Image (cartoon, rainbow, N blue to C red):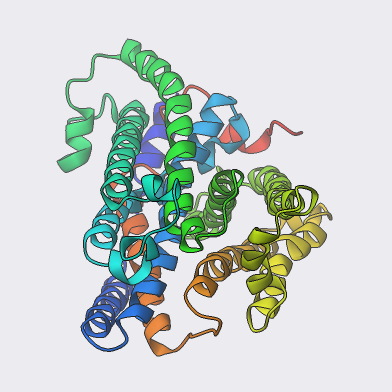
Amino acid sequence: MDERVREEILSKRPELPKLLLLVLLLLVGIGILTFVSRVMGPNAKEAWQIYLVNFIFWTGVAQAGVIFSCALRLTSGRWGRPLLRISEGLGSFVPVSFILLMILLFVGKDYVLPYATEHYHHPKDVWLNMSFVAGRNIIGFLLLFTLSFIYLYYSLRQDLGGIGNKVSGICGWIASGWKGEEERKECWNKLIKLAPAVAIIYAVVLSVIAWDFMMSLDHNWFSTLFGPYYFIASLLAAMGATIILSTFVRKHLHLQDYITQFQYYDIGKLFLAFSMFWVYLMFSQFLAIWYANMPEETGFVIARVRVEPFKTLSWVVLSCCFFFPFISLIPRTNKVVAPILVSIASVSFIGLWLEKFVLVMPSFSPEISFGLTQILITLGFVAAFILTFLLFIRTFPIIPVGDPLFSGKADSHHSGGH
């Protein structure tokens, strides 16, 4: 690694505007106050329901950001190295997600988890025993969080190793005790071993979250594909968030020599592929109901795709997450022009949030209830997610300068697909 490139990257730390921080903190505060005031009043269920939707969505996006980094390392994807740290930055929200999980399990369960107050038929009663639900989710989440933390530690240590005298705080702690270039190779080997472990635990834990907090809201509905459907949708949303956030980082930190049209072209192709995979998993669940002749499961589907107002919203989700990206990403130009790709990713990202709304809300009510309460609580989640990401990129190097597959500006002119 050229030391001049290392010095240039390490110097690119964004100065967060005080006004932006103030606005984000204000939105977080308003979201919290709105939520607390509503759960203490007669509209407690509505507040907890939108809390559940946002917890499921933002937790999936945050953890999937780390998984995208794992995938780049497992596949030795040189093209995506400049985007690797941005995707890892999404994982900065995971500690917040764990706090949200604890609040949901110990404070809000009676409002949004039907099996917490009523018995389902055997054998579902065994699986949906609240002690078992809380135990497996907490243990699984802690295991995933710990593995992700270790993974990010070694990823950052690769970059910060050797400059411990130039940094302080958490960066200084990560860089301390550096043993030279040999340790950089050791970090690489550890990351290669950790990446598949994180990916496997991710698939298991997010499947459990999908089963416990979405699928089980309807006691007649069950699908073995529902777990993969959720964690693939989360990965798709994380790629969308990486595209969106990378353009702002690229512009404000002047990273045009590192994040180029080649990175956008390749992630655009990947985004198109996962949009197609997402719709395949969705359709596969409906297909199984039809060919296996399981009429008892059609209630879940009918409430979402045949009955208004969710029928129209379901078509909006399908259009945002599949039809629009599929048509828009076929031309090459739309994948290399950053503003166009960001617009496509933004539409898909919003659609994936609406998808969680459609999956969760009909289990509580046949009507759509979306007013000021839902908007303010959702904005609080959005602001918290952006705030944790900004603090992450303010603290750590935005480009993985210590990664063996990143060699500087030359990477900007080469791509695995070109």
